[in-house]
Image (cartoon, rainbow, N blue to C red; front, side):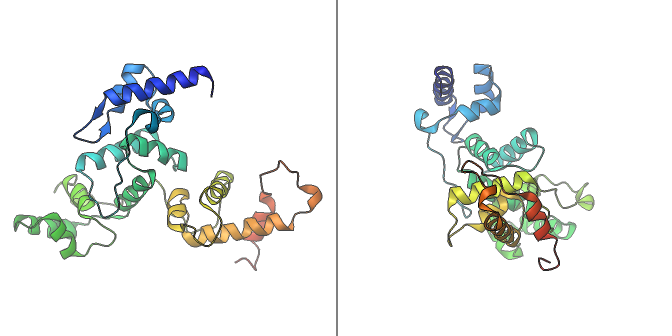
Amino acid sequence: MNRREMEIRNRVSYVARRHFDMRRRRCDWEEISFALQIPLLQCLYNFDASHSRIMPRHMTEDKEWTLDDIEALKSFIEIHFHHRMTVDDWVLAGKYMNVYHSDCISKMWALNAFQMTPQLFAQISELRQAGLLWPTICSTLSATNCTPDIMRFVYSTTTRENVQRLRRPKAQFRISKHQHWTEDEDRQLISLLERFGDGHDIDWNFISKAIGHSKNACRYRRILLRRSQKSREPSQCSSTETEISRSDIYTKSHSPKAK
């Protein structure tokens, strides 16, 4: 890191402390970007929580988010990321929300997995008129993979006029059932395995959500990558080479035995 990069990082950390909202427990990054005249994503990239003494919140799956937090995370992803997000993108989202990036993944996963239907909307409306609280409503309806804050957010953003036109929201990180992998996804899988370990205690749920393939697809892809790496001749492998031959992987994944 050169001197200029260090200065930018120190400036961002200093201004972030001044624009930290104690009520929301996160920074106003739009104001920070305007004050520094630096793009918002660049501010997040140069932000170092250890320098600013701003500790991220640990929002576990059983801890409810406020409607403002869910709306802020959803808007941030829709504005700045129009494609499948990488792990680095989720890290920036975590900095924006002042939470761990794994918490952002879990919350957006739950938001995209929850499907509001006209029947469910009517049931929620009846229970709300009866005076029931959201945790009670969520447990009463037994909504799969849904938390009270997600149900409340989707219900509050749904009107009676458009309830008949409800469709399943398009996920920012779709889980694909096919075995087609791009070169970027291969590199991302290898990076995640190197970062979190390639042993028996791999968090396949996290890897699946981060890449956008099912857990079984990720496991099978790891096997193909390993087989391809072992089958290569030593003379073809250099000490600095990190890429794996995609032609071998494609042949193996589309062979009759692989299927």
